[in-house]
Length: 398
Image (tube, rainbow, N blue to C red):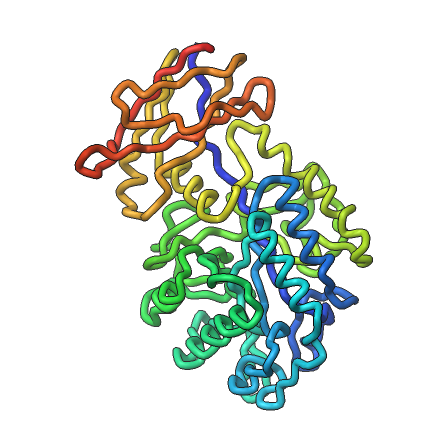
């Protein structure tokens, strides 16, 4: 009987619009949409993300909007960044809760991954809001001087609040983005240490020539991953961005590598009851660990690398062997972790060995279900620093 072996596709949780302290949607009067919640946000709303990460042993991305974290009103110097322009005054949202929340995030870096999103989500042209902060709706990048001013302000507010080093991941507001063909935005992001982009490809023209699969592509130095791979429901697609305390039906399916949510989707109108919503998300997500073809991403770097291993490796099985061809993966010439996750379906935990030493079984099998066994596999380089494009693992019963 042939083996069943899979390099599963990982699911990375990405949470949009974290960081607002006011939830009020003010777009009708020229302000930002914010989260659309009819209450202010509290430290309990950040604790909810951390609890999700803790209970599932993952690091959800929290895409941070930083304007209401501005402690010194520095955004007065960048009129395009806020609806108040040069009269920007953020004193309403500066208080002890900023340091309390920053300390909570510092203490729980292993349960949440802060991600760059923007300052106030939109771009104000002489006080008139336009979508969105980095690109307009026609895919035109904002003037480079403005882009750099916004990025420098993000970095400064990040530092003001002691949030650690700038992140490697980025989600563009309203998914307004243009794959690099003339403006060099991806190169600018890379200057600030960004490596991973998550966006809606159909809003990010021109993208077709940059895509390797429906779920990812490369934009210069960035690995771009499709946001709209997530939460299809029986009616119309994704959860509304403003919906708190959502119902999670089993018919909602995640087809791709991202569970793209907005912050209210994890929260309750009463912050003391956020845990009830997190309970439902944990129950919804845990079964992905049991499937041989899926898994939960522990963090962005590993999850998105697993996506490339999943698509870039030709896998075949025989009665007592699993064969790998990494030629397509290696042709992309991307700097990736050398390890990936392999799942094998078998009645007993199998023993894996690499006859030529090109692979290392770096972790003993974990069995999330009776018949699905999870291995961490590492590709090893030879004395010249080269990894073999083809490799084999022999499999025997324990």
